[in-house]
Length: 259
Image 1: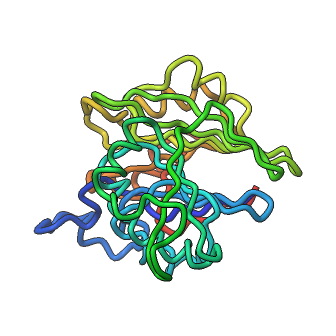
Image 2: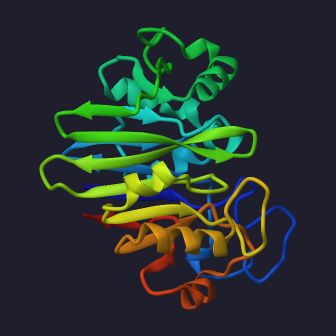
Image 3: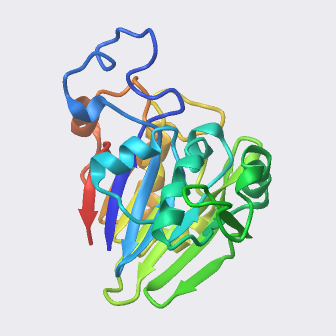
């Protein structure tokens, strides 16, 4: 299994517009954070999770050249705004519609923002086409499975995703944009090799876990390796890394993990 961290930043991105703080002006590339999305490959099958506004640039930077399935964790702008750029993957699938899995809330947002893309095949070459489906609790492919669970995120639920590759048995849990990890989600993630958690900032937030809350959740799940994502400019990468307990670290744009 391969995991590409395409983006690890908050909805404002880092650097932020009109901000001259030490993080926003840092020369460390790990402090340059585009909006959060990941790309997961299980035995050659490519899953794109969320479409940040910078999706095209993220894919060019990290060499992502295929997407067989798209999963939208929720319909907020920083996760859905790049979906029009998925049109290229429809071309590369031979002009087929891209399967899109989401919650009911996510599907309603896609319908509202991209009504021109809801069809069985692209209207013409170069156009997007999305085949919308509600994400089941278990999605099975010959290459592996994806389990889903709901995570509270303000007034909506986000999809938490657990990828298990069939050939290797490797397991990866991805829990972005959430205020807490319910008991069911903790149990699903317990045997994961790597877990990714929302860790917005040091300060509390009404709809995201703070870094302290994410650390406590990581301790409960007890994975060998935990990474924090959706980070704001309130966290400098090297300082945050040095402050975290063993086995917990901040993710950064361009990070690639092979399991």
